[in-house]
Length: 173
Ligand SMILES: [Zn+2]
Ligand SMILES: [Zn+2]
Image (cartoon, rainbow, N blue to C red):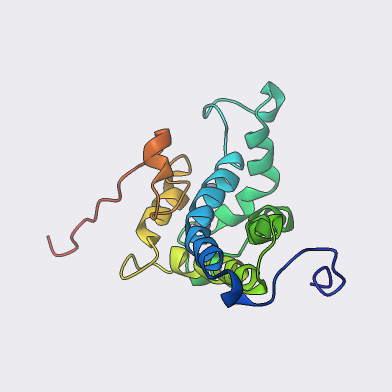
């Protein structure tokens, strides 16, 4: 991050000097993550319906076919499936980390978001729903493709009508 030492980006280096601001930014980062993930993920799937194609103007069909479909090669995802994606999708996915660069911030804000971006896909694909992650929620997305685009923190899928509930079937019956 030579933009900070060269003063091309404004930042403050005393976290405690703007304590209220510092904590507010740290607090909203996790909600920003939920929103960013839903939007970036949703645009890489079909935008209108399952019958549209890129020739009919569906940009999502293009993005899915050439970029996001690589991530969906993991039909039974594991921890390492999370960051298994096309470089173009990596670029889109990591734009989440630049949120903190939009305004004057402390380097901790950037590092906090960056580590979150790096690590959170593990719990989203590890096959365990508890105690963290919501892996079952995202597992259903890998199986069905057209549901559960977001995460479990804020259910944007419920808001936008793409939510599908994961129903556990008992193996003992
Ligand atoms: Zn997807
Ligand atoms: Zn996935």
